[in-house]
Length: 302
Image (cartoon, rainbow, N blue to C red; front, side, top):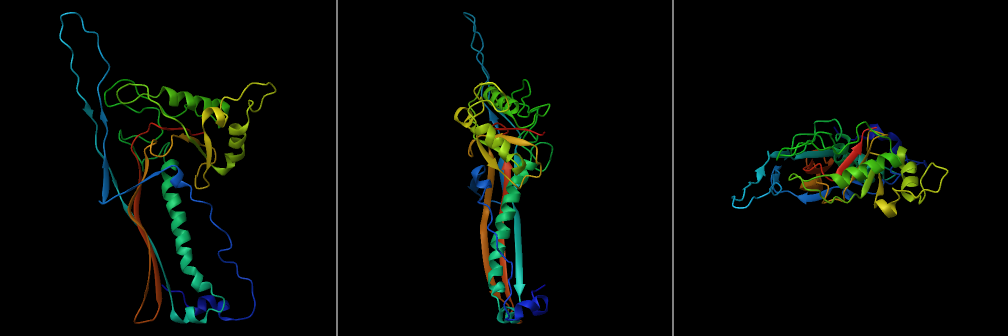
């Protein structure tokens, strides 16, 4: 497949015309604000979890001290995928283009790559509630009500059930979940929350919630419990999300276990075909996204 002159005959004419191509800039990169990037040197990444010791027990006088052992969980593997796209254009098309569109076309591969990387990363969040594409170390989805600790004991939840719409009540419930989450050993942990991820449909409502010092939607003078100055939350508006009503809350990157594995960074190359004199442009990268720990991630699938 190649771009030929008959396909773009209008570009061969030198008469003045307005051509709309690459008129719009892409939005700033979003996924890197939430995902930690790590370089990989293998075709896959393995991860596992280990729980330390349980709590202390009463020791009666004259009796021996009880002993405990760490516990190892199952291993999970994430295999990298190669993503690529190419474009081929004939010598004649490049030479006869009177409007310099073909010379600008190769740059569009970079924009396509950037868009693809965003969609790859955010597909993990799309899959977080009910999907099976991305699972954590206990084999469950990122957001669930039945996360099982490997030392045993009660399941833990990082999802609002029943689901609650974005609002004061929902954010308060998430803040409580975050502050009462326990480690694999059953110890209360500190999980500072940083980002509220929403679709643009919820952007204005979220801005109001996080920037109004008084409680939103009431006639009284109650202080807001979720305003950014108290909760530490900030908005992350993601148009790549498929759901317009679900919302999630995350610890900062590096603490939320959301990871982008870079096996091969984006590589763009060009080469000429000696037989046809066509020009070929290629873009390629290898990567994967993964979750390891559910802790540090919370949400409501409203």
